[in-house]
Image: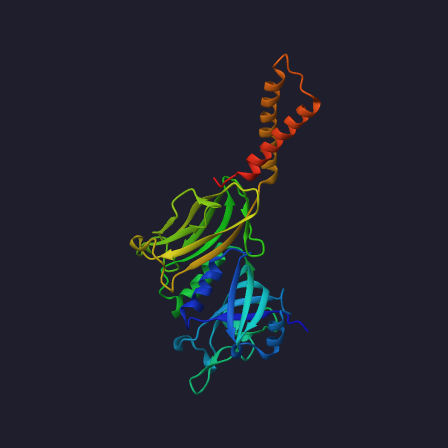
Length: 361
């Protein structure tokens, strides 16, 4: 029998686990994110089904578990902060590790963390009397907590990062960011990832909007050392139209980078990579292991009809040029087959010129 919902949490015990939380808060709905768990962290009731991929399509609550001594609850339980709803789209077992692929959905916010803890299963992460960390990081939830709400609201997202900021794993974060969306330029058309990747038309212009926020700030304070976000694109199918650097130089703001897609007949694949860089001096260098990095795959769909029309126009012009030259001589009476071959050759030349020789621009 399929469980109703999963609870999948990550801690701050390693930089990668902490970064998964930051990525889950920053990536747009529809993006994919991978979690991984050793077998001992997964409920026995889930192992066989996860290994067989039998739980694909099930909903999951993603959360951060605070394993620090100061965060410990009575009885040794570790508090969990939910932050995002997701759908499991793939799972497998590699050695003794379970790999889970999630399609990210709405943000999840608990207005009462105490009430949320009370509704959790008994075997959540906890500290034993011997001082050892135990419990399950991936298990079934008996039911949806009434204290949780789901939303796309960035105002609620701010409330979630405030909850996380109060925990040791995120206390030193100078800012949090999230991708508001990828919009077709000069429109309100928001592009949504499909099966984990953006699908963009060729020869179009887009604007990537990023919202950043410092939970420590208020209306009159909050200045910290400037940090930078750098967008890297896989050329030639995507080109930057503006600077790839975004300055995090205020406690809150909405920034954007403009990009364009190249001209192509066939489908092409590219990517957008957004990375945190501490200072302008380090821009261009590889970020540290504990800095934010977001990977967004992109599929560029070929502009077949546009190029077909261009091929017809070019073929027609080439054909007319040859026919005018052929028929302008009074003494020439070309056979119909010659005229037909001239037309076919002109149209074929137009097709080859457009579909065979087009390059990215």
